[in-house]
Image 1: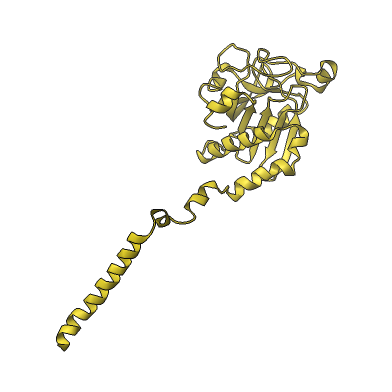
Image 2: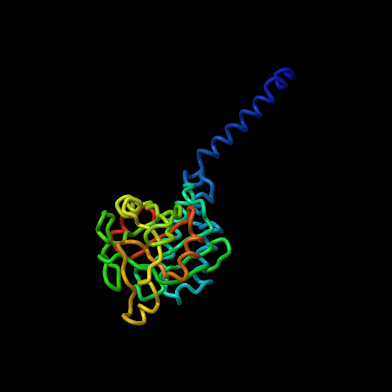
Length: 245
């Protein structure tokens, strides 16, 4: 009898423990098998995203005219481009808020690393996009219209408009023809505050985001080489079809 007990005793204990564990797992509700934090993790923004969104309040961008919608969409696209490794100059984001008229300073260049607003100035839209307000947009060559969406800044060059910056459109159907169309950032005398004082809005380009001559070189030097540039409008078609905004 003693030999019987010593032979079967350990096996019985192991088997009993195993059966208890299996019955506990079977009895568990299906939802409780997942880690409790799994669902919460999807909805909680990372500290980096939270701090960047806090910049909107910190820099008083609302009082400067930048809509919260423009900033939020800009950060959405920035985060996607950055996660894909598309941004080489990832400290900088430029937001062109075309929901504002051209008589307002609607270009905002922000250093996300230091939390500084580096530039806030005028920027033009295409002559066929509208007069004071840009309301019509196109990706087509020779349309002389602005193209909405996200761009990555490329190299600089000296052309007919002087020191200029090439822009690579990242959104098919919206701005993917930017390089072929010659859509670049450059300076223009018609993008000056004196023009606003005279007629209430600045002049228009052939589709390029032209900026004032007195700051164009500083802006281009800051944002060149792979930073995110976003041209925003509260355009329903763009906002409902963009994969980045």
